Length: 366
Image (tube, rainbow, N blue to C red; front, top):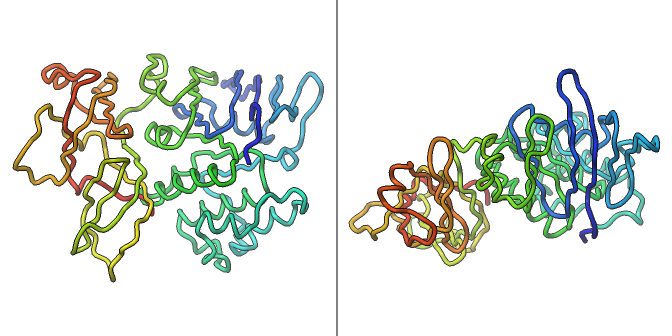
């Protein structure tokens, strides 16, 4: 169950060579993304919260409890802060099995502080079948799920995640995003998620903190990534992906399936598989914004399997193109040129049709 109040409140300064972190920040419950380019101070901020770095001055509190204060000479050790930390390379114990890795934190926690069972954690992350496996023989996605389980087994009040998807292949990225959403929904643990991917932030976070050169540039709903001119100057909009969660089900023979995104159904690429799958499964799909064609007139006679009606919600100009935010029951973004926007007359409220080839839809995790 989620605790009430401000998850993290801090005002700190930390100098590392030529770089200075200087942040004042309140982080609410929920999933908060720390977004910014490389070298902006995202990991340094997480290390200060976790206790691996001590600020030169300032104060950090967690749900009202001070864990660091330079003025009051308080510096709670990392293992006593009640904060889980998952890093990019997972950092599992190589000499222990999967089960032994997960049991490590669990065994150090008193019974009265255990809020859920290890079986619950392993079920959420779908790793029970890996329990006796040597961690050196795991895939990247499996390693990150085990690392998440190990952190959760210590029953943290807050979970810090430092670019956990950066080294993963596309299918595993979708799976981990799904699992993080389930962890928050089922266990109510607030998360602080570091990323430089706009697509990941929009797909996962409830709110975002944008950092640049050691300072907070902006904070609020994830929409500030597209609306705030100061924020947009540090964002990379190239290769923007729509990461959309829905339910996949068979629609015919020969392995044809569709995914339901709210009231909209999209036909997926055909995948050959053994046997017939009849049950719906939850999954995340990726559709590059540049792979979607936008039309003001309903097209006919196309080989593309998906032609869906939508309404333009907002138009966001970037340095190199225009991102058109469309509503299909949930937001989906289409990348067009400034010239196309002008010639077609694409503005907020415009009724449009989106043309999406089945082959441009990638199923990331199910």
